[in-house]
Length: 453
Image 1 (cartoon, rainbow, N blue to C red):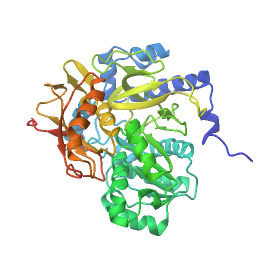
Image 2: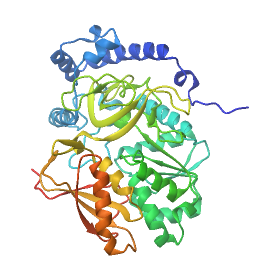
Image 3: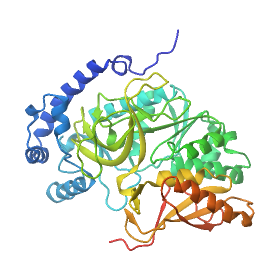
Image 4: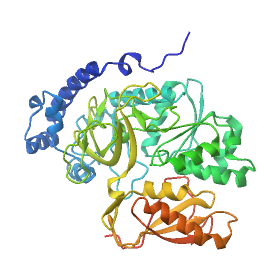
């Protein structure tokens, strides 16, 4: 008997019309639910609409952005003062119904607990992840080495998704360190590794010195990455594929919504939205600067806006996340329906050099394309607060192991020529291999020389 194609055959295989009808029904119910909350009632009033006014998709797209990180922080601070908890004024369920509150691993300072769940919300969270796990080839009984951050991070909320799916989880966590991860990998022989792209690169470099073997000899059949742009960068993806010699996937679930994962297409095709019945995201794009709606068509780039469709604890309505994404609407060779998303970068990571917009992922891809003449490690040096950068753009780049130092001048010319194709010519400071450090957590690509205020 052939294995089923979808985790949830009925929902994931809906026609476009059926899915749209379901989404609009859920949207109206979600807006009515949120309207009972004073925070959202005021937001809707300021935007000039009530839930009953939203009868069509066009009506919905006309609603302006209502939330972003700054507004969420203010909501958190107000709820701390008024209700003595940090979840936010947009908490729509009684706090007695909350069973977990988490934040992102990239948080600095006082976090916003964006990933706050009721039991129902956790059920939805598990369903979204199970659809992704099935698409990425995970099956009940698989052993997973979990090397993402743990504690109060949202990745810790992934543990119930493994348990309910029937997966054997080995929760070393990023905090456990590479030596322990490799020891436990030898003991349990997991088929799957979960980590950030940065940590996957780190393991490729460090495994030989720690264990005396290459990373691919650890025996992983799948490496699944998340948490930062990287897998969508061609040179980084190739480095990971060469290093582990196994199937590789990328997934995400920003703000506990917009569940998406990559597929087995020969060329990277972006991440398939696997749960559009639970949220709206990729099909509600806005211009990052003006926040005006952008027409969603194949290849378009914009800022995704999240709206929950079935969330009770901390629902989001028109939340501009700050991620710049590219949306693909054309059919994928893997046959999975719906839209796909490629993460370009964060809106606050945008650099403007002599009027040219460029994201760190583009710069990193150019540098990595020269491996092994370079290690791939690099830093963008900022002497003033971005996005504007006084030319030239300054980079620190590690040259490769054993490279003839007399070749650096020619290598620099070739890197500059390739960067010039993106209308930016950098100034490169060469540094020895390993001098920029390595980390099990997210890569910090900026070196900020200006004073934070």
